[in-house]
Every structure is written in C-alpha cells, then in structure tokens.
Length: 141
Image (tube, rainbow, N blue to C red; front, side, top):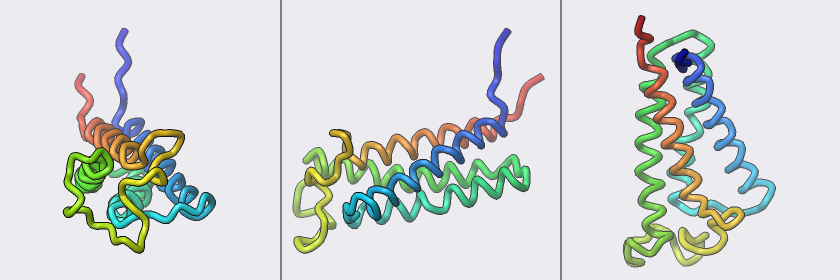
C-alpha cells in the first residue's frame, strides 16, 4: 500500500515552512539583535509574502496557488545562492553588495549554531518550492 501526499497536505507543509522561516528571521533580527545585511533583506522580500499567499490559497482552497510559491521561492533561492557564494568566498569581494558601515554578508554574525543563515534560507526556499510543486500535481486514479 502506498501513501500519496495530497496537494493540500503539501501546500500546508509549504505554508508551515514559510511561517517558521519568517518568524525565525524576525527572531534573529528583533530578539537576537543581528542586523540583516542587504542580501538578507532581499531574501526576506521573497519569503515574507509566502505565508500570506499560501495561507490564503489554503483558506480559499485554491489548488493552483502553489505556482506562486514556486515563483517566489525561485527568486529568493537565487538570492540565497548568491549570498552563499559570497559567504563561501566563491564570489570575489569587489562584487559584494554590503557596505563597510552596515552588516557584512560574510562575517560570523551570519551563522546560527554554526550553520550559515544563507544556507538555511536556501534550504527553506528549496523545500517551499518542492512542496509547492507537489501541491500542483493532480492525483492519479
């Protein structure tokens, strides 16, 4: 007997991921006092609408709302991937968007329990995009 993930369950899981990610970055900034760098702000611009959009899709039982989850997650994931490149030193310093007076994209302040925040962001976007794609699949009989 096989168990299939329904579109609604996948969408609910995607919504939970985005709520947890959004609340986490608010906690990091507001409670822990870690100022976000410019690239973190760009990632937030893609993440913060997701709980609202996916939540409304669940509320209104819109089976196609996952496409917005995919689109926003791809945009945020690309910014997170760029951020990881800066953090890892793959992208050269002259290309960094952060200023000398603001928080840095590459310092130790960009890690939680030793895991870089850009990597956590990328994982949240990948998971959200994957679950959003699953929510779009029509169940087969």
